[in-house]
Length: 195
Image (cartoon, rainbow, N blue to C red):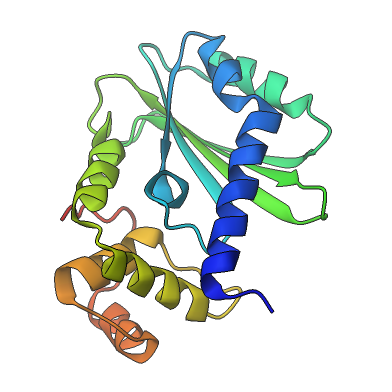
């Protein structure tokens, strides 16, 4: 059976292969967008949850611009499903794209692309969060976060930032303590936290 660290390494490597296979970075660049990897793959904290997160920026934000990139991405036969959420007229000034990619082992990977208006409130915000987490990430903190992710029951929806805040800010070390921490720190929408 795979160890926790072997699983993390395998999923990280597979995620990088998917980024290459989809040509996702060049697709977004082809419409003049800036695209940045964020989330667990960026920070080396990927575990069981097969998701890849990108934030994409353009100086103008319209569905037509966003669909140009998604149309090209959808041409890849491994992309099995796409969801679209228009949040242009909200404080987030974004379009959310969620796609599902089927790998060679028939496992589905979720690729989240948040297309954000350049210059709006969240422009660069989560890139800064990732940089701050990477700056304080010791081998012990990394292993604790991976262990909590590994021990999370399959199907349990927990945002990565919850693990990072619990471990880095509050020194949580085991899953029971993490469950209790989450009861006193309910996640309602975007969590604005940086170490």
